[in-house]
Image (tube, rainbow, N blue to C red; front, side, top):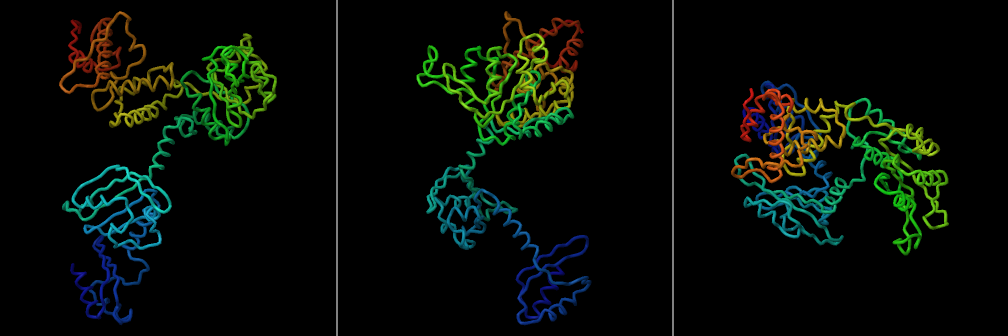
Length: 515
Protein backbone atom coordinates (compact mmCIF):
# COMPACT_ATOMS: atom_id res chain seq x y z
CA UNK A 1 0.00 0.00 0.00
CA UNK A 2 2.93 2.34 0.69
CA UNK A 3 4.23 1.88 -2.86
CA UNK A 4 0.81 2.54 -4.34
CA UNK A 5 0.46 5.68 -2.22
CA UNK A 6 3.91 6.94 -3.27
CA UNK A 7 3.23 6.40 -6.96
CA UNK A 8 -0.25 7.91 -6.76
CA UNK A 9 1.07 11.03 -4.95
CA UNK A 10 3.87 11.59 -7.43
CA UNK A 11 1.57 11.16 -10.44
CA UNK A 12 -0.97 13.58 -8.92
CA UNK A 13 1.75 16.16 -8.29
CA UNK A 14 2.52 16.10 -12.03
CA UNK A 15 -1.13 16.72 -12.88
CA UNK A 16 -1.42 13.32 -14.53
CA UNK A 17 -4.31 10.84 -14.12
CA UNK A 18 -3.90 7.13 -13.38
CA UNK A 19 -5.91 4.98 -15.79
CA UNK A 20 -4.76 1.58 -14.57
CA UNK A 21 -2.43 0.29 -11.87
CA UNK A 22 -1.46 -3.28 -10.98
CA UNK A 23 1.04 -4.35 -8.30
CA UNK A 24 2.76 -7.74 -8.42
CA UNK A 25 4.68 -8.35 -5.15
CA UNK A 26 7.10 -11.27 -5.44
CA UNK A 27 10.22 -12.29 -3.46
CA UNK A 28 10.32 -8.99 -1.55
CA UNK A 29 10.17 -6.89 -4.73
CA UNK A 30 7.07 -5.13 -6.04
CA UNK A 31 6.57 -4.65 -9.77
CA UNK A 32 4.14 -1.81 -10.49
CA UNK A 33 2.40 -1.68 -13.87
CA UNK A 34 0.92 1.72 -14.67
CA UNK A 35 -1.08 3.35 -17.43
CA UNK A 36 -1.68 7.10 -17.11
CA UNK A 37 -2.87 10.21 -18.91
CA UNK A 38 0.15 12.51 -18.58
CA UNK A 39 -1.98 15.67 -18.72
CA UNK A 40 0.48 17.63 -20.86
CA UNK A 41 3.61 16.52 -19.03
CA UNK A 42 6.43 14.88 -20.92
CA UNK A 43 7.47 11.31 -20.29
CA UNK A 44 10.87 12.54 -19.00
CA UNK A 45 9.20 14.76 -16.40
CA UNK A 46 7.05 11.93 -15.13
CA UNK A 47 10.05 9.56 -15.10
CA UNK A 48 12.05 12.10 -13.07
CA UNK A 49 9.23 12.39 -10.56
CA UNK A 50 8.83 8.63 -10.20
CA UNK A 51 12.58 8.29 -9.83
CA UNK A 52 12.29 9.85 -6.34
CA UNK A 53 10.56 6.67 -5.01
CA UNK A 54 12.83 5.11 -2.34
CA UNK A 55 14.53 1.80 -3.29
CA UNK A 56 13.41 2.10 -6.92
CA UNK A 57 15.40 -0.49 -8.90
CA UNK A 58 14.24 0.08 -12.47
CA UNK A 59 11.72 2.09 -14.48
CA UNK A 60 10.92 1.56 -18.16
CA UNK A 61 8.19 1.65 -20.79
CA UNK A 62 6.39 -1.56 -21.78
CA UNK A 63 4.27 -2.25 -24.87
CA UNK A 64 1.50 -4.26 -23.25
CA UNK A 65 0.17 -4.31 -19.69
CA UNK A 66 -0.27 -7.70 -17.97
CA UNK A 67 -4.02 -7.19 -17.83
CA UNK A 68 -4.12 -6.57 -21.57
CA UNK A 69 -2.08 -9.73 -22.18
CA UNK A 70 -4.44 -11.77 -20.01
CA UNK A 71 -7.48 -10.29 -21.73
CA UNK A 72 -5.97 -10.98 -25.16
CA UNK A 73 -5.22 -14.61 -24.26
CA UNK A 74 -8.70 -14.96 -22.80
CA UNK A 75 -10.20 -13.52 -25.99
CA UNK A 76 -8.22 -15.85 -28.24
CA UNK A 77 -9.32 -18.86 -26.19
CA UNK A 78 -12.97 -17.80 -26.20
CA UNK A 79 -13.01 -17.06 -29.91
CA UNK A 80 -11.63 -20.51 -30.70
CA UNK A 81 -14.34 -22.30 -28.72
CA UNK A 82 -17.04 -23.73 -30.99
CA UNK A 83 -19.72 -23.13 -28.34
CA UNK A 84 -21.31 -19.70 -28.03
CA UNK A 85 -20.38 -17.91 -24.78
CA UNK A 86 -22.14 -14.82 -23.36
CA UNK A 87 -21.60 -13.28 -19.92
CA UNK A 88 -23.32 -10.31 -18.25
CA UNK A 89 -22.71 -8.22 -15.15
CA UNK A 90 -25.11 -7.75 -12.23
CA UNK A 91 -27.04 -5.10 -14.20
CA UNK A 92 -27.52 -7.30 -17.26
CA UNK A 93 -24.92 -5.62 -19.44
CA UNK A 94 -22.86 -7.78 -21.81
CA UNK A 95 -19.30 -8.25 -20.58
CA UNK A 96 -18.24 -11.18 -22.79
CA UNK A 97 -19.48 -12.44 -26.14
CA UNK A 98 -17.25 -14.72 -28.17
CA UNK A 99 -16.93 -14.98 -31.94
CA UNK A 100 -19.27 -18.00 -32.28
CA UNK A 101 -22.08 -16.20 -30.44
CA UNK A 102 -21.55 -13.00 -32.47
CA UNK A 103 -21.75 -14.93 -35.77
CA UNK A 104 -24.93 -16.78 -34.78
CA UNK A 105 -26.60 -13.61 -33.46
CA UNK A 106 -25.62 -11.60 -36.51
CA UNK A 107 -23.59 -8.99 -34.60
CA UNK A 108 -20.10 -9.99 -35.72
CA UNK A 109 -19.22 -6.46 -36.79
CA UNK A 110 -20.91 -4.67 -33.87
CA UNK A 111 -19.48 -3.79 -30.47
CA UNK A 112 -21.93 -5.37 -28.03
CA UNK A 113 -19.77 -4.99 -24.91
CA UNK A 114 -21.61 -2.73 -22.45
CA UNK A 115 -24.96 -3.13 -24.23
CA UNK A 116 -27.86 -4.64 -22.33
CA UNK A 117 -28.35 -8.35 -23.00
CA UNK A 118 -31.90 -7.66 -24.20
CA UNK A 119 -30.32 -5.92 -27.22
CA UNK A 120 -29.09 -9.35 -28.38
CA UNK A 121 -31.45 -11.28 -30.66
CA UNK A 122 -31.74 -14.22 -28.28
CA UNK A 123 -34.88 -16.41 -28.31
CA UNK A 124 -35.33 -15.54 -24.61
CA UNK A 125 -33.40 -13.90 -21.81
CA UNK A 126 -33.38 -16.58 -19.11
CA UNK A 127 -29.78 -15.59 -18.41
CA UNK A 128 -31.25 -12.63 -16.48
CA UNK A 129 -32.97 -15.08 -14.12
CA UNK A 130 -29.52 -16.33 -13.13
CA UNK A 131 -28.94 -12.94 -11.48
CA UNK A 132 -31.50 -14.17 -8.90
CA UNK A 133 -29.42 -17.28 -8.27
CA UNK A 134 -31.19 -19.65 -10.65
CA UNK A 135 -29.35 -22.06 -12.96
CA UNK A 136 -30.39 -23.87 -16.15
CA UNK A 137 -28.74 -26.97 -17.66
CA UNK A 138 -29.07 -28.12 -21.28
CA UNK A 139 -32.27 -26.24 -22.11
CA UNK A 140 -33.25 -26.86 -25.73
CA UNK A 141 -33.69 -23.58 -27.65
CA UNK A 142 -34.47 -22.54 -31.23
CA UNK A 143 -33.17 -19.34 -32.76
CA UNK A 144 -34.48 -17.99 -36.08
CA UNK A 145 -32.02 -15.61 -37.76
CA UNK A 146 -31.60 -14.12 -41.21
CA UNK A 147 -29.14 -16.91 -42.02
CA UNK A 148 -31.49 -19.70 -40.94
CA UNK A 149 -32.60 -21.74 -37.96
CA UNK A 150 -30.16 -22.53 -35.17
CA UNK A 151 -30.95 -25.27 -32.63
CA UNK A 152 -28.85 -25.48 -29.50
CA UNK A 153 -28.68 -26.51 -25.85
CA UNK A 154 -28.17 -23.62 -23.41
CA UNK A 155 -26.59 -23.90 -19.96
CA UNK A 156 -26.78 -20.79 -17.76
CA UNK A 157 -25.26 -20.23 -14.30
CA UNK A 158 -24.79 -17.26 -11.97
CA UNK A 159 -21.27 -15.87 -11.38
CA UNK A 160 -20.44 -15.49 -7.69
CA UNK A 161 -17.77 -13.47 -5.92
CA UNK A 162 -15.63 -14.69 -3.01
CA UNK A 163 -18.44 -14.15 -0.48
CA UNK A 164 -21.11 -15.85 -2.61
CA UNK A 165 -22.80 -12.72 -3.93
CA UNK A 166 -24.12 -12.82 -7.51
CA UNK A 167 -22.08 -10.44 -9.66
CA UNK A 168 -23.16 -11.67 -13.09
CA UNK A 169 -24.16 -14.68 -15.17
CA UNK A 170 -22.84 -16.76 -18.07
CA UNK A 171 -24.64 -18.72 -20.78
CA UNK A 172 -22.98 -21.40 -22.93
CA UNK A 173 -24.75 -22.50 -26.13
CA UNK A 174 -23.91 -25.85 -27.72
CA UNK A 175 -24.90 -26.49 -31.33
CA UNK A 176 -27.22 -29.48 -31.54
CA UNK A 177 -25.73 -30.53 -34.88
CA UNK A 178 -22.24 -30.62 -33.36
CA UNK A 179 -23.53 -32.77 -30.49
CA UNK A 180 -25.11 -35.18 -32.96
CA UNK A 181 -21.86 -35.40 -34.94
CA UNK A 182 -19.92 -36.09 -31.74
CA UNK A 183 -22.39 -38.79 -30.70
CA UNK A 184 -22.12 -40.44 -34.12
CA UNK A 185 -18.33 -40.34 -34.03
CA UNK A 186 -18.37 -42.14 -30.67
CA UNK A 187 -21.09 -44.69 -31.42
CA UNK A 188 -20.26 -45.45 -35.07
CA UNK A 189 -18.53 -48.85 -35.01
CA UNK A 190 -17.06 -48.52 -38.51
CA UNK A 191 -14.85 -45.51 -37.76
CA UNK A 192 -12.03 -47.42 -36.09
CA UNK A 193 -8.39 -46.51 -36.41
CA UNK A 194 -5.10 -47.93 -35.23
CA UNK A 195 -5.34 -45.77 -32.10
CA UNK A 196 -8.29 -47.94 -30.99
CA UNK A 197 -6.04 -51.01 -30.91
CA UNK A 198 -4.83 -51.30 -27.30
CA UNK A 199 -1.35 -52.58 -26.47
CA UNK A 200 2.18 -51.45 -25.64
CA UNK A 201 4.05 -54.75 -25.81
CA UNK A 202 6.72 -55.10 -28.54
CA UNK A 203 4.73 -57.81 -30.34
CA UNK A 204 1.66 -55.57 -30.64
CA UNK A 205 3.70 -52.55 -31.70
CA UNK A 206 5.32 -54.67 -34.44
CA UNK A 207 1.89 -55.75 -35.71
CA UNK A 208 0.55 -52.18 -35.76
CA UNK A 209 3.66 -50.77 -37.44
CA UNK A 210 3.45 -53.40 -40.18
CA UNK A 211 -0.31 -52.94 -40.61
CA UNK A 212 0.07 -49.16 -40.94
CA UNK A 213 2.70 -49.63 -43.66
CA UNK A 214 0.55 -51.96 -45.75
CA UNK A 215 -2.80 -50.20 -45.19
CA UNK A 216 -2.54 -47.82 -48.20
CA UNK A 217 -1.73 -50.66 -50.61
CA UNK A 218 -4.21 -52.80 -52.54
CA UNK A 219 -2.58 -56.09 -51.51
CA UNK A 220 -4.57 -58.85 -49.84
CA UNK A 221 -3.94 -59.10 -46.09
CA UNK A 222 -4.36 -62.36 -44.20
CA UNK A 223 -4.90 -61.82 -40.46
CA UNK A 224 -4.49 -64.84 -38.23
CA UNK A 225 -4.93 -65.16 -34.50
CA UNK A 226 -6.95 -66.93 -31.86
CA UNK A 227 -10.61 -66.12 -31.29
CA UNK A 228 -11.06 -62.88 -29.39
CA UNK A 229 -7.72 -61.28 -30.26
CA UNK A 230 -9.23 -58.43 -32.32
CA UNK A 231 -8.85 -59.58 -35.92
CA UNK A 232 -11.86 -57.63 -37.18
CA UNK A 233 -10.79 -54.55 -35.22
CA UNK A 234 -7.42 -54.63 -37.00
CA UNK A 235 -9.14 -55.19 -40.35
CA UNK A 236 -11.35 -52.14 -39.81
CA UNK A 237 -8.30 -50.06 -38.86
CA UNK A 238 -6.51 -51.14 -42.06
CA UNK A 239 -9.56 -50.19 -44.13
CA UNK A 240 -9.89 -46.82 -42.38
CA UNK A 241 -6.23 -46.01 -43.11
CA UNK A 242 -6.39 -47.28 -46.71
CA UNK A 243 -8.07 -44.19 -48.12
CA UNK A 244 -10.59 -46.31 -50.04
CA UNK A 245 -13.86 -44.52 -50.71
CA UNK A 246 -16.09 -47.59 -50.56
CA UNK A 247 -17.47 -49.29 -47.44
CA UNK A 248 -15.99 -51.91 -45.13
CA UNK A 249 -18.13 -55.03 -45.63
CA UNK A 250 -17.58 -57.95 -43.22
CA UNK A 251 -18.95 -61.47 -43.53
CA UNK A 252 -18.43 -64.47 -41.25
CA UNK A 253 -17.81 -67.43 -43.53
CA UNK A 254 -18.42 -69.89 -40.68
CA UNK A 255 -21.91 -68.58 -39.91
CA UNK A 256 -23.53 -69.47 -43.25
CA UNK A 257 -24.12 -72.64 -45.23
CA UNK A 258 -22.33 -73.03 -48.57
CA UNK A 259 -25.37 -71.99 -50.66
CA UNK A 260 -26.20 -69.00 -48.47
CA UNK A 261 -22.57 -67.87 -48.41
CA UNK A 262 -22.40 -67.96 -52.22
CA UNK A 263 -25.62 -65.97 -52.62
CA UNK A 264 -24.40 -63.42 -50.04
CA UNK A 265 -21.00 -63.00 -51.67
CA UNK A 266 -21.95 -63.07 -55.35
CA UNK A 267 -25.66 -62.21 -55.35
CA UNK A 268 -28.24 -63.68 -57.69
CA UNK A 269 -30.50 -62.76 -60.59
CA UNK A 270 -34.28 -62.74 -60.32
CA UNK A 271 -35.81 -66.23 -60.24
CA UNK A 272 -32.45 -67.95 -59.79
CA UNK A 273 -33.95 -70.21 -57.11
CA UNK A 274 -37.11 -70.68 -55.08
CA UNK A 275 -37.62 -67.71 -52.79
CA UNK A 276 -35.27 -65.44 -54.73
CA UNK A 277 -36.23 -61.80 -55.06
CA UNK A 278 -37.97 -60.87 -58.29
CA UNK A 279 -35.35 -58.28 -59.21
CA UNK A 280 -32.42 -60.27 -57.88
CA UNK A 281 -29.90 -59.09 -55.30
CA UNK A 282 -26.33 -57.76 -55.54
CA UNK A 283 -23.67 -59.67 -53.61
CA UNK A 284 -21.22 -58.33 -51.06
CA UNK A 285 -18.49 -58.11 -53.71
CA UNK A 286 -20.62 -55.52 -55.47
CA UNK A 287 -21.61 -53.82 -52.22
CA UNK A 288 -17.93 -53.45 -51.28
CA UNK A 289 -16.97 -51.93 -54.65
CA UNK A 290 -14.09 -49.45 -54.15
CA UNK A 291 -14.00 -50.55 -50.53
CA UNK A 292 -12.94 -53.57 -48.48
CA UNK A 293 -14.46 -57.05 -48.24
CA UNK A 294 -13.50 -58.75 -44.97
CA UNK A 295 -13.77 -62.56 -45.10
CA UNK A 296 -13.78 -63.59 -41.45
CA UNK A 297 -13.05 -67.25 -40.65
CA UNK A 298 -12.08 -67.86 -44.26
CA UNK A 299 -10.76 -71.30 -43.26
CA UNK A 300 -14.34 -72.52 -42.73
CA UNK A 301 -15.33 -71.85 -46.35
CA UNK A 302 -16.40 -74.83 -48.48
CA UNK A 303 -14.05 -75.77 -51.36
CA UNK A 304 -16.63 -74.97 -54.08
CA UNK A 305 -16.99 -71.46 -52.69
CA UNK A 306 -13.20 -71.19 -52.42
CA UNK A 307 -12.96 -71.75 -56.18
CA UNK A 308 -15.39 -68.93 -56.92
CA UNK A 309 -13.58 -66.60 -54.50
CA UNK A 310 -10.28 -67.37 -56.24
CA UNK A 311 -11.73 -66.54 -59.67
CA UNK A 312 -13.25 -63.28 -58.40
CA UNK A 313 -9.90 -62.22 -56.93
CA UNK A 314 -7.96 -63.09 -60.08
CA UNK A 315 -10.41 -61.63 -62.62
CA UNK A 316 -11.78 -58.72 -60.57
CA UNK A 317 -15.24 -59.73 -61.76
CA UNK A 318 -18.19 -61.61 -60.28
CA UNK A 319 -21.09 -63.47 -61.81
CA UNK A 320 -24.38 -63.57 -59.92
CA UNK A 321 -25.95 -66.97 -59.26
CA UNK A 322 -28.16 -67.84 -62.23
CA UNK A 323 -26.67 -65.04 -64.35
CA UNK A 324 -24.27 -64.89 -67.28
CA UNK A 325 -23.03 -61.28 -67.02
CA UNK A 326 -19.55 -60.64 -65.68
CA UNK A 327 -19.73 -57.64 -63.31
CA UNK A 328 -16.45 -55.78 -62.74
CA UNK A 329 -15.58 -55.01 -59.10
CA UNK A 330 -12.71 -53.15 -57.48
CA UNK A 331 -12.49 -54.62 -54.01
CA UNK A 332 -9.66 -55.05 -51.56
CA UNK A 333 -9.76 -58.41 -49.78
CA UNK A 334 -8.89 -58.86 -46.10
CA UNK A 335 -9.17 -62.31 -44.57
CA UNK A 336 -9.02 -63.63 -41.03
CA UNK A 337 -8.85 -67.07 -39.48
CA UNK A 338 -7.96 -68.79 -36.22
CA UNK A 339 -7.07 -71.97 -38.12
CA UNK A 340 -3.64 -73.03 -39.42
CA UNK A 341 -4.20 -72.70 -43.18
CA UNK A 342 -0.85 -74.35 -43.94
CA UNK A 343 -1.99 -77.48 -42.15
CA UNK A 344 -5.41 -77.30 -43.84
CA UNK A 345 -3.70 -77.15 -47.24
CA UNK A 346 -1.65 -80.25 -46.38
CA UNK A 347 -4.83 -82.05 -45.28
CA UNK A 348 -6.64 -81.07 -48.49
CA UNK A 349 -9.22 -78.94 -46.64
CA UNK A 350 -8.17 -75.65 -48.17
CA UNK A 351 -7.23 -74.92 -51.79
CA UNK A 352 -3.50 -74.46 -52.24
CA UNK A 353 -3.94 -71.91 -55.05
CA UNK A 354 -6.31 -69.79 -52.94
CA UNK A 355 -3.96 -70.03 -49.95
CA UNK A 356 -1.05 -68.59 -51.95
CA UNK A 357 -3.36 -65.97 -53.45
CA UNK A 358 -4.57 -64.59 -50.09
CA UNK A 359 -1.35 -65.13 -48.13
CA UNK A 360 0.38 -62.12 -49.70
CA UNK A 361 0.75 -60.08 -46.49
CA UNK A 362 0.20 -62.29 -43.43
CA UNK A 363 -0.32 -60.61 -40.04
CA UNK A 364 -0.35 -62.56 -36.78
CA UNK A 365 -2.03 -61.06 -33.70
CA UNK A 366 -0.50 -62.59 -30.55
CA UNK A 367 -2.84 -64.09 -27.94
CA UNK A 368 -3.40 -62.27 -24.65
CA UNK A 369 -1.33 -64.78 -22.67
CA UNK A 370 1.72 -63.65 -24.69
CA UNK A 371 1.07 -59.98 -23.94
CA UNK A 372 0.10 -59.98 -20.26
CA UNK A 373 1.61 -56.49 -19.65
CA UNK A 374 -1.29 -55.17 -21.73
CA UNK A 375 -3.89 -56.55 -19.30
CA UNK A 376 -3.99 -53.39 -17.08
CA UNK A 377 -4.52 -51.24 -20.21
CA UNK A 378 -7.50 -53.34 -21.27
CA UNK A 379 -8.91 -53.35 -17.74
CA UNK A 380 -8.70 -49.56 -17.49
CA UNK A 381 -10.30 -49.19 -20.94
CA UNK A 382 -13.22 -51.53 -20.23
CA UNK A 383 -13.84 -50.09 -16.75
CA UNK A 384 -13.89 -46.56 -18.16
CA UNK A 385 -16.44 -47.52 -20.83
CA UNK A 386 -18.60 -49.35 -18.28
CA UNK A 387 -18.46 -46.47 -15.78
CA UNK A 388 -19.42 -43.98 -18.49
CA UNK A 389 -22.34 -46.20 -19.53
CA UNK A 390 -23.84 -46.57 -16.05
CA UNK A 391 -22.80 -43.13 -14.76
CA UNK A 392 -20.69 -44.35 -11.86
CA UNK A 393 -17.04 -43.73 -10.88
CA UNK A 394 -14.39 -46.12 -12.17
CA UNK A 395 -13.47 -48.74 -9.57
CA UNK A 396 -9.74 -49.53 -9.42
CA UNK A 397 -8.37 -53.08 -9.23
CA UNK A 398 -6.66 -54.27 -6.07
CA UNK A 399 -3.14 -55.71 -6.50
CA UNK A 400 -4.52 -59.16 -5.60
CA UNK A 401 -7.17 -58.91 -8.31
CA UNK A 402 -4.61 -57.90 -10.91
CA UNK A 403 -2.31 -60.72 -9.82
CA UNK A 404 -5.16 -63.21 -10.27
CA UNK A 405 -5.71 -61.92 -13.80
CA UNK A 406 -2.00 -62.23 -14.58
CA UNK A 407 -2.09 -65.91 -13.53
CA UNK A 408 -4.97 -66.75 -15.91
CA UNK A 409 -4.16 -68.19 -19.35
CA UNK A 410 -7.01 -66.31 -21.15
CA UNK A 411 -8.26 -68.91 -23.66
CA UNK A 412 -10.91 -66.39 -24.78
CA UNK A 413 -8.35 -63.58 -25.10
CA UNK A 414 -9.57 -59.96 -25.06
CA UNK A 415 -13.21 -60.97 -25.47
CA UNK A 416 -12.98 -63.09 -22.31
CA UNK A 417 -11.15 -60.29 -20.49
CA UNK A 418 -13.94 -57.84 -21.30
CA UNK A 419 -16.54 -60.21 -19.84
CA UNK A 420 -14.48 -60.80 -16.69
CA UNK A 421 -14.02 -57.06 -16.12
CA UNK A 422 -17.72 -56.27 -16.56
CA UNK A 423 -18.67 -59.14 -14.25
CA UNK A 424 -16.18 -57.93 -11.63
CA UNK A 425 -17.47 -54.36 -11.81
CA UNK A 426 -20.99 -55.63 -11.10
CA UNK A 427 -19.90 -57.95 -8.29
CA UNK A 428 -17.66 -55.46 -6.49
CA UNK A 429 -19.50 -54.21 -3.41
CA UNK A 430 -16.76 -51.86 -2.20
CA UNK A 431 -14.96 -48.95 -3.77
CA UNK A 432 -12.47 -51.23 -5.55
CA UNK A 433 -12.43 -54.61 -7.31
CA UNK A 434 -10.92 -57.41 -5.25
CA UNK A 435 -9.65 -60.84 -6.24
CA UNK A 436 -12.94 -62.36 -5.07
CA UNK A 437 -14.76 -60.27 -7.68
CA UNK A 438 -12.62 -61.70 -10.51
CA UNK A 439 -14.50 -64.81 -11.62
CA UNK A 440 -13.54 -66.88 -14.65
CA UNK A 441 -15.86 -69.15 -16.64
CA UNK A 442 -14.90 -72.30 -14.77
CA UNK A 443 -15.67 -70.56 -11.49
CA UNK A 444 -19.08 -69.47 -12.76
CA UNK A 445 -20.05 -72.97 -13.93
CA UNK A 446 -22.90 -74.43 -11.89
CA UNK A 447 -24.61 -77.80 -12.05
CA UNK A 448 -27.85 -77.78 -14.02
CA UNK A 449 -29.82 -79.07 -11.00
CA UNK A 450 -28.49 -76.39 -8.64
CA UNK A 451 -30.51 -73.26 -8.11
CA UNK A 452 -28.98 -69.89 -7.49
CA UNK A 453 -29.67 -68.60 -4.02
CA UNK A 454 -30.30 -64.85 -3.97
CA UNK A 455 -27.91 -62.73 -1.97
CA UNK A 456 -29.29 -61.23 1.25
CA UNK A 457 -30.77 -57.81 0.58
CA UNK A 458 -31.06 -55.11 3.19
CA UNK A 459 -32.91 -51.79 3.13
CA UNK A 460 -32.30 -49.87 -0.09
CA UNK A 461 -30.43 -52.93 -1.35
CA UNK A 462 -28.69 -53.51 -4.64
CA UNK A 463 -30.29 -53.99 -8.03
CA UNK A 464 -31.72 -57.38 -9.13
CA UNK A 465 -28.60 -57.96 -11.24
CA UNK A 466 -26.32 -57.41 -8.25
CA UNK A 467 -28.46 -59.75 -6.11
CA UNK A 468 -28.28 -62.37 -8.86
CA UNK A 469 -24.49 -62.04 -9.09
CA UNK A 470 -24.34 -62.24 -5.32
CA UNK A 471 -26.17 -65.55 -5.59
CA UNK A 472 -23.53 -66.81 -8.00
CA UNK A 473 -20.80 -65.74 -5.62
CA UNK A 474 -22.47 -67.50 -2.69
CA UNK A 475 -22.86 -70.74 -4.65
CA UNK A 476 -19.21 -70.62 -5.77
CA UNK A 477 -18.04 -70.13 -2.20
CA UNK A 478 -20.22 -73.02 -0.99
CA UNK A 479 -18.99 -75.36 -3.75
CA UNK A 480 -15.36 -74.47 -3.13
CA UNK A 481 -15.69 -74.99 0.63
CA UNK A 482 -17.41 -78.33 0.05
CA UNK A 483 -14.47 -79.61 -2.00
CA UNK A 484 -11.69 -78.06 0.09
CA UNK A 485 -9.97 -79.59 3.11
CA UNK A 486 -10.04 -76.29 5.00
CA UNK A 487 -11.07 -72.66 4.79
CA UNK A 488 -7.47 -71.64 4.08
CA UNK A 489 -7.20 -74.08 1.17
CA UNK A 490 -10.57 -72.87 -0.15
CA UNK A 491 -9.32 -69.28 0.02
CA UNK A 492 -6.20 -70.24 -1.94
CA UNK A 493 -8.37 -71.97 -4.56
CA UNK A 494 -10.47 -68.83 -4.93
CA UNK A 495 -7.40 -66.59 -5.07
CA UNK A 496 -8.42 -64.50 -2.04
CA UNK A 497 -7.14 -64.11 1.50
CA UNK A 498 -8.27 -66.25 4.42
CA UNK A 499 -9.85 -63.18 6.04
CA UNK A 500 -11.71 -62.24 2.87
CA UNK A 501 -13.23 -65.70 2.63
CA UNK A 502 -14.27 -65.62 6.31
CA UNK A 503 -15.99 -62.29 5.66
CA UNK A 504 -17.88 -63.76 2.70
CA UNK A 505 -18.90 -66.79 4.78
CA UNK A 506 -20.21 -64.42 7.42
CA UNK A 507 -21.99 -62.32 4.78
CA UNK A 508 -23.85 -65.32 3.33
CA UNK A 509 -24.26 -67.24 6.61
CA UNK A 510 -22.12 -70.18 5.44
CA UNK A 511 -20.77 -72.47 8.14
CA UNK A 512 -17.83 -74.89 7.90
CA UNK A 513 -16.51 -77.07 10.69
CA UNK A 514 -12.97 -77.28 9.24
CA UNK A 515 -10.16 -74.83 10.12
